[in-house]
Length: 199
Image 1 (tube, rainbow, N blue to C red):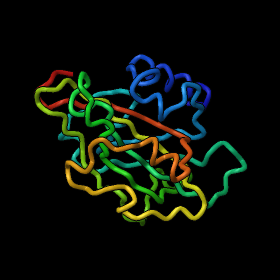
Image 2 (image 1 turned 90 degrees about the horizontal axis):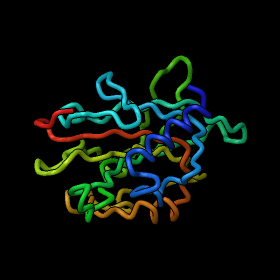
Image 3 (image 1 turned 90 degrees about the vertical axis):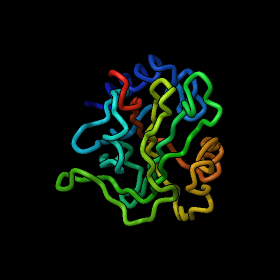
C-alpha cells in the first residue's frame, strides 16, 4: 500500500473508532501523514487497523516490521521506538487509568529487503505485557505507535516508570513524547477482548 492510501486508511479507521477525533487526539495529529508503514504481527496474524485479537493470541511480544522512511533527509542510522498503549483502561466507558502502558521498546532499525522483520538489542524501557481487558469490560483498543528517536537518545527504565501493574496505569504519554522529542512516523492498532467474547 502506498503512503497516500495508507494515510487515508489510518485516518478513516481512527475516526470510525472514535480515536481521532477522540481519546488519542493529543497523541496523533488529525492530519497525520505516515512516513513508513508499521507492520505488527502475532504468530503470523497481522494487526490491520482495528482487527480483533484474543488475549491468548498476544501473550508474547509481536514481530515488528517497517521500511526506511520516505523522507530522504532521515539518516540511515536512525533508530525508532515502539510504544503500545491502551486508551480504554479499565473500561472504554470509564478510562480513568488511560493511557495504560503495555510496552515501550527503543532501538528498532528499519528492515530491508533481506530481513522482513526488525530486531533490537536494546533492553525494553517497559517490558511487554499483553492485552488483558477485564472480564466485565467491552473490548479495548490498543495503539502501536512508532516514533523516530532523536540523536543521542538514551533513556533508562526509571525515565518511564516501573513495570508493576499499578505503575503502568495513567501513563502521561503526551508528556513523555514531548519531553524526549519523539516524532511519530507510523502507527497501527487493534482491538482485544476477553476470550469469551464473540468477535
